[in-house]
Image 1 (spheres, rainbow, N blue to C red):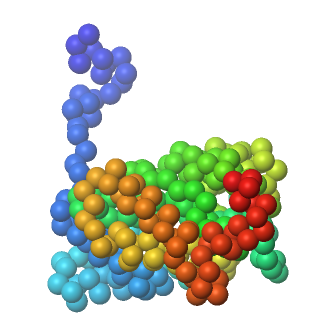
Image 2: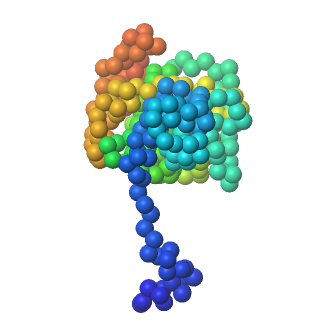
Image 3: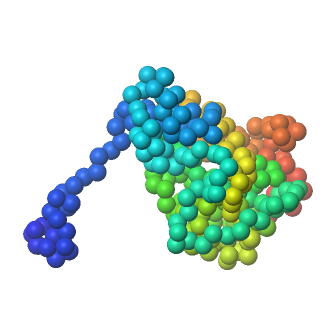
Amino acid sequence: MAITTQCELLGLSRASVYYRPRGVSEADLALMRRLDELHLEHPFLGARKLAKLLTDEGFAVGRRHVSTLMRRMGLEAIYRKPRTSLPDKAHKIYPYLLTGVVIERPNQVWATDITYLPMARGFVFLVAILDLYSRKVLAWRTSNTLTSDFCVEALQEALTRFGNPEIFNTDQGSQFTAEAFTDVLKEHAISISMDGKGRWVDNVFVERLWRSVKYEEIYLHAHETPKQVNQALIRYFGFYNARRPHQALDQCTPDAVYFASGELKQAA
């Protein structure tokens, strides 16, 4: 069937059929890499001040372009505001459950978030699931799109390998409010908690993980492909969990704290 006929049947213009989206330019990739670094150093800065810092460094960029790149990267300034992330209006928002809760054992509270990882050419997104008591990375996945699919895969792996937490805390991002994600938590009878007004501080533990991953691995190597990124993350998270001492854990490793009772190690 001719393309013209196909377009007529579908009600599409021929121009839209032949359109091919343009990739991210080298200049924008360099900007995005530097934006990511500045966001880690100053997570409270918005697009206006980040644009000023970039122009001071010699980048020809305005506030609107910085805003566009930040949306593409999934970056957002951290400060007190009604929501920590923009949810999908069609998705249910769950109440925040950690007020006054003392986290004192493994598998009591898990948390998750998504971050941007630059490569030599292009970028990927990383989601990780963290046990807040031990700081152990329970599961992770990378993706080139900000959908719920890779988040659900990471969640299912964590539940399969380490059992169920009592509470699972996220922000209000559309990946975590989607039914595909929350239904998995409901099936396992896990209490769902979502950050609300003024609760940006709950993401600090995951933000510290992102800083470690990027400064200790990602920024040190110009990974060419997502496959190389995944191989590097396998090595890094193995080191992070089993060998890297944490000051907040009295110089113990996440694995040592998480498996301290022995019962969880046997179950895993």
